[in-house]
Structures are given as C-alpha cells and as structure tokens.
Image 1 (spheres, rainbow, N blue to C red):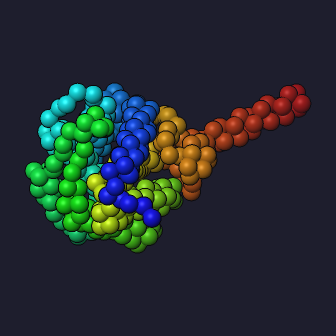
Image 2: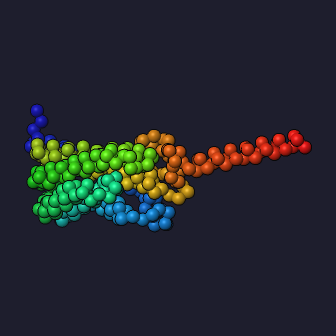
Length: 312
C-alpha cells in the first residue's frame, strides 16, 4: 500500500507533477501558436468582429500568462518569492477557466436564439465560482523547496469547495448547451445544426476533466496529488472552449472566399474541410452548385454549337 504522506513518495509525485506540467504547457503553446492565424484574420478584417471574440482572445492570452508563469516557477534554480508567484499562477488560471466559461455561455446564448433565461443559471454559478476563486487567491500559499529547487504549493485541500462549485458550474453549462442544441434544432440550418451538435463534445470534455481535481482534492492524499489534475483540467477547458468557438465561427461566419480552416474539423470528418465559405443549400455549398450549374451551362452551349455546325 502506498504511503501518500511518505516524503520519498511525495518527492516522486512532485517530480511527476512537474513532468505533467511541462508536457501540457508545451501542448498549450503549440496549439496557441498554430492557431494564432485566427486572431490575425480578425485584425486584417477577414472575419466579422463580434463581442465573444474579446472573450476568446482574453482566454487564450490569460492562459498563456499562466503557463509561462508556471514554467518559470518550476524551472528556476534560485529562490524566489513563492507566495507571490503562486498567487499570480492561481489568479490567471482562475481567470482562464472563468473566461472559458464565458465563451461556452456565449454559445449557449446563441443556440437558444438569444433567450436570456437560458443563461441565467450558468452565469450565476460562474460568477459565484469566480468570487470564491478570488478568495482562494488571497490565501494561496507556497514555499521554496530546497529538495526540488522550486516552489511547492501547500494547504491545497483548502480549495475543495471552490473546485466542487466549478464542477457544478460546468455541469450547468453542459446541460444548458446540450438541451438548447436539441430543443432549437429546427431553427438552425442543416450545416449549422450539425456543427452545434458536434460541439457538444467540446462542452462535455471540460465537465469530465473537472471531476478529476474534485476527486483527488476530496481524497487529499498530499499536495502534489491534489494538484496533479489541476493543470490538465485548465488546459482541456481552455482548449475546448477556444476550439469550439473557432469551429462555430467557421460554420456560421467563415472567411470570405476561403475554405473552412477549423482545426477540429479533422476530428469530425474530412468532409467538413471541403465546405466553402458561402452558405450551403441543403448541405451542399453554393459555390459547388454554382460551379455545377456553370459546367452544365457550358456543356449545353457546346452542344448547341455542335448541332448548328452539323446543320450548316
């Protein structure tokens, strides 16, 4: 049986936590820079600018600050002010999760045809959670570990109630979005409806990932294990929220004259990447219809010319 409070085991688990953070932070930066062209398209006027874009950009850049701060704290070899460092990381990670919630809620508002009642509960739970998060920031503690040559968070089990409320908020987001997609299915066009339905996965994954921190903090094995799934939950939540926003933007308001470039299109079938920017008719791109019509017209004209030549 594992002795979770044994210093040797805590050291091993702390090292495993550091490796997990390195891997996931690296994944986030890869995704961040590989999809940066999405923001560039808005700046260059290739996409319409709407208010959820501010949430999207803030969510990504706030999380980038969190990730960069984490990497600094676990890789520096000289002692720093660990409490200040820890509170910066906790604050920006909480901001990232809250902004991701805002992105999800904006899509709930959209799929429910702008009915305010549909987002009252998710907004109330998200704001309540954020208030508790700010309280957690004010009492976050960390000490310098001469063994690991890095900062180590302590008293992490104190965040259990906030973590549970975060899970409840994401459950309400998942339910509100999923119900909205199916209740309002007839009000959506065929392609837009299928995009919203596929995006249920992006809402479901953060909810599932939020159950892991709740489980381990409730067990309270040690501080390292309490934090083991905090970073995976953060990266998954932000990645899913931003990926969902990109995909829906490409479905509802794609770039003019360009093919859909949603990163997640490959997950849902290669046929989606062949959809062009113009609105489709019965699932068939208008440009494809136009090209078919033009080819048919050209064939008809050639046939007429041939008949005329034979008659003469």
